[in-house]
Image (cartoon, rainbow, N blue to C red):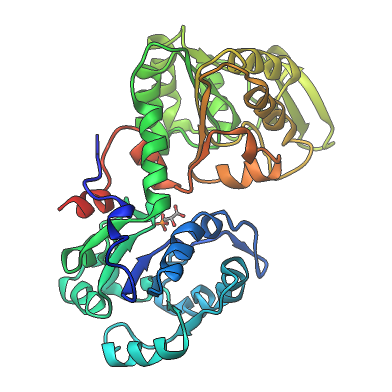
Length: 395
Ligand code: 3PG
């Protein structure tokens, strides 16, 4: 398990007036010309504020989406600059210059009238994903210190994550430190009663973490389309619901091995394919044309009663088709158990993929001990593996 050798507080003595390259994650959810959630920006604010108070100059580097060369404009970080300025309450200069040719003198000149410079999407350079050494060195030459404030990108062995730290004194940001200490707490073993809640559509992409928590935690709840695959494995009719055919055999094996731990829906909310009628159904009443879109009331209560008495909880993924009302209600109800759990040492963490959006939608942020900004990075870290971006800070 990773322990960071350096702390953010280590930079206190020498950050004054320095040019600091801060790798952040401005990869925000963007639909119909609007950002739907700013959690990742809000969470890096303490680091930015600290640097500004210490009169440091900040070079922000981030990725945004997964651009291919033909759709560059759509992935320009210029799109979100103004929104970020509002959250920072500070003007940001967007610099379009190529990182491959940009000179330190130019950066110094820009810093005469700006404290924060945002560089264009780092994934516009093919050298980024290749962790090209020359590219990393060139970027490092623009600053004096490097800060990794991008936990959510730290599972990528990219130039701006693992390359630049080779050439500069490098430190974790405040958010990165918080992520690690909270997530470590989640995977540290003790004998308390522990529960993991997994939803979303695919078992295959989460199989390793599902197995990890089936081995480690007392109980594991499955909802969403993931649960449909388990129901299918139990030969239960799931109608035309989404499930993963290739994982049915694996699901069967997991049920056999962990029958005491696995908690599945006992009733569901279905939408009929043709009439679009929405109904509560016990499992033996599901018809061929039914589409399961949420957990039913009996299941909600069953999951609630398990969560309310647990000491430690991990949540990843929605329990139903939460984007469309009323199918967010099952997830919302079960989240109430997290809110109402009054155990003295109750520790709850949520993260990964869509989880931030879903918890925002059901207004549940404040009920969790910690919400991770990580998607893939969260899932990799909480199964006990290190992350390249964290290892590189220790080298
Ligand atoms: C994320 O959204 O999980 C991070 O920004 C990483 O994005 P990626 O999966 O495209 O590397």
